Length: 183
Image 1 (cartoon, rainbow, N blue to C red):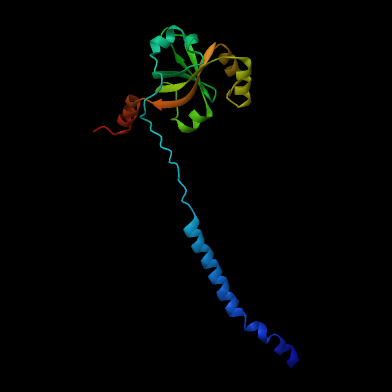
Image 2 (image 1 turned 30 degrees about the horizontal axis):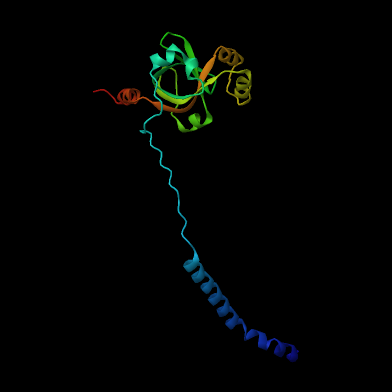
């Protein structure tokens, strides 16, 4: 048995030098990486809610002929929400009293403020022509909470596909004033 112990005696003497060699190799590799690596540039995305809105159209102008705006991006300011339609749409009134459909995209639902009946908001998006395929897509996405919601939406000839909803400042001030106790 003594012969077996002597056969491993030489291997034990190499353990410390191999460990030091490994540390030096890893240290040399890290030094090489720090010298040869190029820094990456990180793009910073900055969103400004106070940025100028594109193609602001007066409600009176928009009310005279919504079909003329089909295919265009428009921004309507000071819109009063008359009623909600399902989970992703709402109605507003044009100047002549005609109800007009606004459909909120997933981006608008995720990034914007919650909208309730009676709110005054600024909306921005594309005016689109209504079709059966659009209604089918909305139904598949769960936009209609009741069966009658689709029937109501069918009456729209065109609609605004809203990508941005901004609560008007006057409304926010009213909410703050309402939440403060009166003395």
